[in-house]
Amino acid sequence: MSTRELAYSLIDRLDEKQLDALIVILSGMSGVKPVEEIEPDEEELRMIAESEADDSEAEPIEDFAKRLQIAV
Image 1 (cartoon, rainbow, N blue to C red):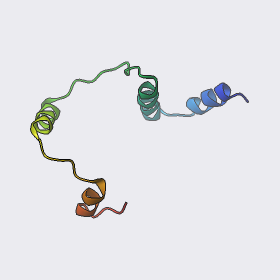
Image 2: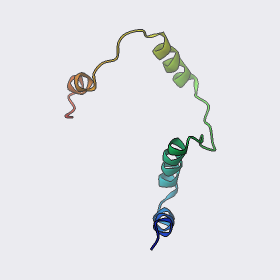
Image 3: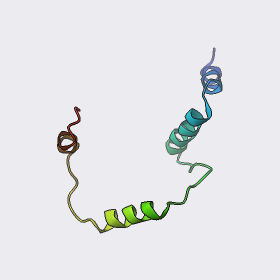
Image 4: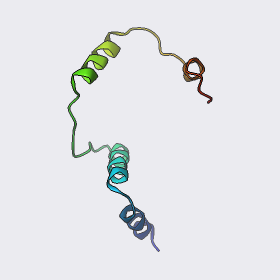
């Protein structure tokens, strides 16, 4: 079985949610934007504005995980 045939075979087994995720991944790899662009809602716009206004330094992932009591 060729690589292309294997890829098609695997894709045929995916459900719609998995296909959506695959499209996002492949779009990122190819530099092509996904077909459906979703506009941010009011809450997302608020969070975007807050993050743009935040001039603090980023927190290392290890510290963030420790603060949330998540093992890394």
